[in-house]
Image (cartoon, rainbow, N blue to C red; front, side):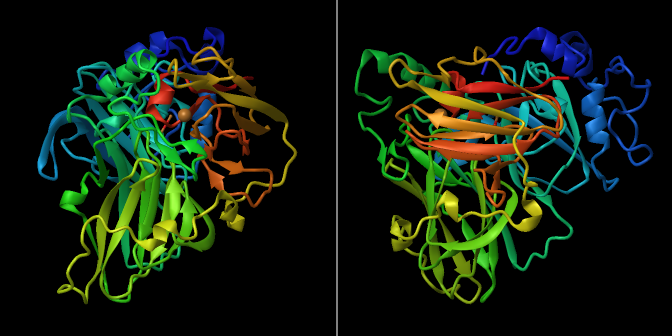
Length: 516
Ligand code: C2O
Ligand code: CU
């Protein structure tokens, strides 16, 4: 997205020190002016005495105070990340793309709740970028939305992200600029809870991704053909003539015809193997890092027990398959019987699959299943949103909403444009909320397509039942509406948007704005 002044300037200045201060504070080794009310030489929000004090960036005192109230372990985690052009091998194919440190996915960042995470992000891309830490209720000025929570990181610049890991679970990070997420710029972010019982032998991140970059075109070409060719050629999808249909998604499944789908950066031609000790249990952390593809996931010959969604625990539920939108995560426990089994992700409605192998340690001699097998579980009992109930400790208190707002999802394929209430970002006015309020939003989908709607900075309860699952991304099917509730406990300016990269880039985004 390339928003400029997406919200009222006055409101922005209320919550942040403003662009002028940012400009001096976002690069490494350049001590910025301290934020108002912050003594020079201390780090806003850092627990005194537990970490070296170093001013990283200016911040709003309200945001800093919220950060200071988070529990900390006193441990500092430091990472470096370089976003740059890279040549990657995807099975037999070499592609030129953009990646974090020449890897797809980028290297995992992993810590424990309460650790202070510092990530120095060097931008060696030919365009500006930022990093968004998807799903975290983190301090607002580290949320990584350019021109909303920070200035863009220009080519050649470095930006230091620094925040306390606020809650446990399966997350990921990616740029919040243009179509960059549809390249290789994504990586898992795993936050452990020291009190979690565990009870599995293998802990594996499974990142799903739809791929086109460097195979004839780039994501920017795809966006261009959606916005131009579509208008010129009614009835045609870019890169092909097929319409993607899915019953489970209520009709049109997607806009972009991807030549390749990946599990942890690997196509079926170079299948990943997940080794599980005989009789053991594996926790799979499924992350849909795609841009325009829902994945239907199943393990041949087995059911899966869903234990978490979007990082938060649910009362375990056993299913044959589940369907995940872009930005959603599901943690599942599998207990494979002896053998080698296909773990298959179907690009829903697109007729293409990608797979990995789950192999038990007593089955080294067993031949792997032939690629392309479609386990019957894919057509079995599918997880429904209504199957998910938050465990007691993950529930929001039962409260009457202080703010309720209806948000209509709007837009069309021709011309290719998306928005909320008929307005493309930044024209839909922000929702104004006050700290301490219970906020209830209803998303009503008036379009012909499904949309995975994502809220920054909060994990909401789906529906009005306090046992509704806690999520940060929820699928809204065509013609349907979904209500969410959240507590306004993390001040700042937060995006609400569709996690389809192309819909986001073409306007399906707005802001939830804390006001005094
Ligand atoms: Cu992963 Cu604003 O999104
Ligand atoms: Cu959308």
